[in-house]
Image (cartoon, rainbow, N blue to C red; front, side, top):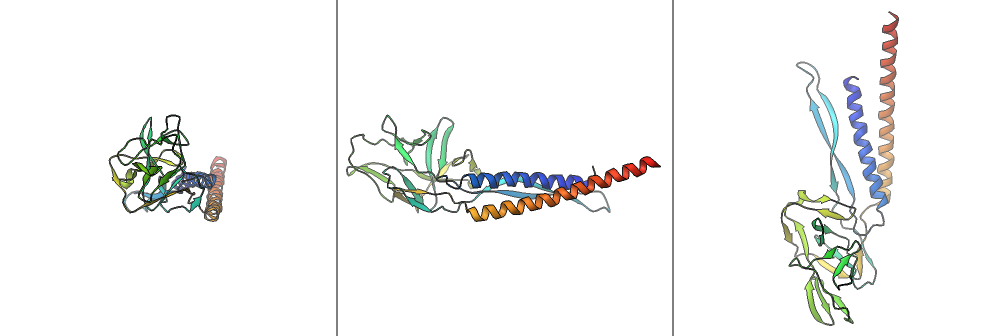
Amino acid sequence: MDSAGYVSLARQSGLMQEMQVVAQNIANLSTTGYRREGVVFAEFVRSAGIGAPSISFADAHGRLTDSTQGPLQPTGGSFDFAIEGQGFFVLATPGGDRLTRAGAFSPNHQGELASTDGHLLLDSGGAPIFVPPNAASVMLAPDGTLSADGVPLAQVGLVLPAAPDSLVRETGVMFRFDGDTLPVEDAALFQGFLEASNVSPVTEMARMIEIQRTYELGQKFLDREDERVRSAVRILGQN
């Protein structure tokens, strides 16, 4: 295969990865706390020799998470929390602490607040949050202070990774990070609300159509290149 074929295949491979990301975004339109992903393309340029034009390859080498906040939707749930502004909730998992924007929690059998996957919600000091099972009223203040029957229990922890580039999506709404975290002071918490996905269905569908058309053009080019090579082989074989 000549250089044109390899360049086209590299572009086709990147488009397939981008299509997978778009499909994942569309599948999470209704996922609480989900943040849209995009593919980051880079150009790899290789010299073809002195006096010859260079060869440029497209490389879909990374993914970018859209930090735009999703709309806050009212639920009325006492343990549904939404963040307005920057920051993440901290969850204790078997693999270490993880960050999330999904704020649907409920007390487990021990009275500790946990996510829908059973991971414990941590307070600003890194400890689980216990809610008395006989509490008649549970209130969350905008600064994250959680109270039961007027008695403060804990302050819900909100953090940001010290190195933003260290944030890696581990599952749909949970992120892994390397290094330290920083407390968030300019965000507000709302009780009885959940943050919806920030995916725009119109934008994602338009992008899917664009990717599909670009992929089809690339495939037509590869088909023509294949036919050109076959024709050359046939002609050379007749001589």
